[in-house]
Length: 331
Image (cartoon, rainbow, N blue to C red; front, side, top):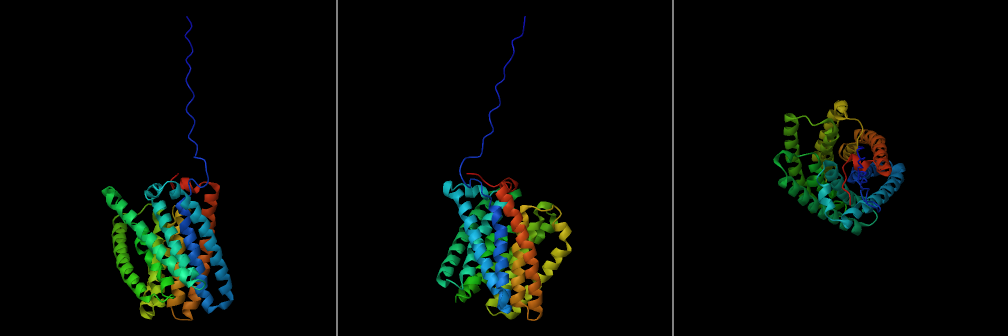
């Protein structure tokens, strides 16, 4: 008797990505764009001493604004389709860092607009701070509601809770010095808490290699406290923070092999804006001629870092690999 052949149904087809444009735009595109904003502002600061480069700096900033506008529209299409996707982006570190950088790019846009449209710049700065406050509520809620083992303070907290220190870049030139002083005092206190907790954590446990580039974010608030202090006329405070930033940069350079042990990843975007911020801080806070020469060197170094990193990250996005590498949410 012949045993009848058994027939097995074919496996179900893999679920394809949902049709439509920009269904999985990764927030990881924004940290390198933030680095480009910082680079343009550093070139603008250098242009105050070297007028020959001023025009190039403004043209570059205009291009970065257009790039950010395109990226912002692309990513914003996700929460517009499904608002709950924002909470999903907050679950992974690249998502939190990327969304925070996107909001900070709004505030940086205000700084770019100051010489051209002061009223619009002021409005954009306040919109950016309001968005950052909303983001802070989301991040704090997720932090407190999560399991105890996941309650880890990361350098990304600087972006979310100290990022307001970018607003005085627009507020001080627009005559809002009182608000800038209040922001300075509050953000300095918060930054000190984050620095202290981060130091305690790194002494207790060495971060894994892929996350180490995020440590560079600690340099950004130091540099911005120097720049804003210089804008407020606090020369001694500005110089102290600028020197502290240079010392921290020296530590990072000495440990560069350890810091970048994992090789290139999209998290390298975290390396870009702190270096550009330090270049601006040195140009504004360190007396000439040392400030000019050292600041110009840092501007050139930031140019050599920020643009290639941005190109590589944006190329990954264009090729479709960035979303998978950073676990971006899908709508």
